[in-house]
Image (cartoon, rainbow, N blue to C red; front, side, top):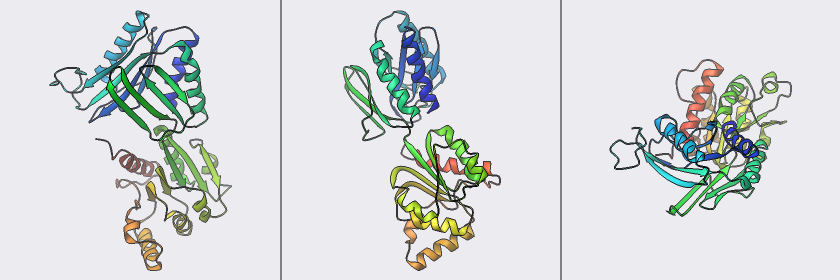
Length: 324
């Protein structure tokens, strides 16, 4: 979120100072494109920049293009397709990583400052909104987006881009101990809305955790059944301080559907827990196989920080499994 904020803040400040500013936006991407859908940059006529559309020689080329267009003091709105392949017949980006991306170059209008400030306010409040880009310009509302991204293009004069602004993914961490703190610190840099639950009000690692958006104290982890909802953008990680509390948390959430659910613990402990669930008819073997356990990429992690890296890597792998 901080990167998004920096882009919109530079645009707002530039408009306030009557400094021409251009928005560069990746509207679509595929393959191994370094610039992914939703990547954005702001470039001013003075050469100030925030954000990224993928880096490398391609980004440098577009920054110089933006500064050149801004110096002409004309309003432009243009789409540029880039192919990351030197064998491409045209629109070569200069990069050879394969894939392609469609980039918008747009001189932001002074009358759109209200929309820009509304985006900043919405992100500051950890809220979602709907950004629209089209040949008519830029617009923003607090309407609920049906999907994270939408891009339709019939021609360069007939296209529409919509994006759900704010956090697109929610991470629910059950347990606020040392591993939870380390994971929160790491996931905070990856634009996840993080919500921690614990039943220990005196816990120092919970009090010291300044990387999350919400902290909730529960009397018993069984309460999670009514607190954490299913969701295709929801990631749940159970890492409480013991078998009994892990068991209570998992039983509360076992029937819900999430993008990802992980359980921290030894293979032996988890095996005994799952065998008991099957024997008691609480869950099927097929259902339990959907739980990432033992959690994380297996890199023989030892410290809370190493464990956090392994878990974060697994979460990102699941989050991005649909990308080509």
